[in-house]
Length: 355
Image 1 (cartoon, rainbow, N blue to C red):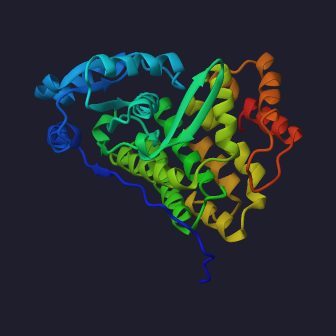
Image 2 (image 1 turned 60 degrees about the horizontal axis):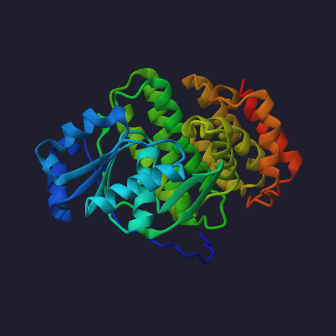
């Protein structure tokens, strides 16, 4: 096999995986980090779980921030950062989904403090050095190793209580990280191999979730880890740009927006992928008799994904504005050139959803 030259920057971090791990090992990980004055970052809904996980170590928590909101509004990041500065915090303990991790990252960006992340969804943000902040309806993202969590504890027990529709949307969000990692400018053989294995795990977990298999959440959480790892190095492209612009402008739910847009971006791009990559993606989606985009469509239908921008909360009146906002940000890096008409077609299809 001939492999073109490439660069792969391996990212630092400690990752642990196992059922019951968060309850059994969180204290040891806090000891290893040497934290004595942590800020606990969560949503109000996660507070009971977080306090249970921390248990006797709550004396290490000097402040709790529970004002997490999707897309990390600047005022939310500022409020959490103020708690750090007034309480002499020495570490950030994040217990929750992507918005919670994202809030901890915003604080880390401002303060340089380390993060220990305990994910409760399949967001994958815990594996990336990517941060995002929203101000005046515009979401801005960047990369900084200071926001990459120092330790991540993956515990399938913590995701089994997710409502099924949220679990599906969150896993499809992770699927989007994998798929886009196949075609970004920084994509390379390592990220592609990681992404394809992530697609296999997520496909198996989603179909297992539908079939009531006991290890479905284990597969989905492994897939989320692989998805985040691939995205962390490969970076983003058209799909993520669309989601970030729409999420910031219209405050759409993050995972549902990714799930709505992914099939239509893949359908647009699949013909521009190298033939072997497109074939490998189709195989990872358990589809050997058709294209990768058809394999993804079948998966959505099989798991009953409610995946349209209309379902995510975008109104028909906002669709035209959304097309204009994205078109104003062109050009966007993509394996196939993207023009305003393409943006309109992709978003109109995503608004209606798949059938």
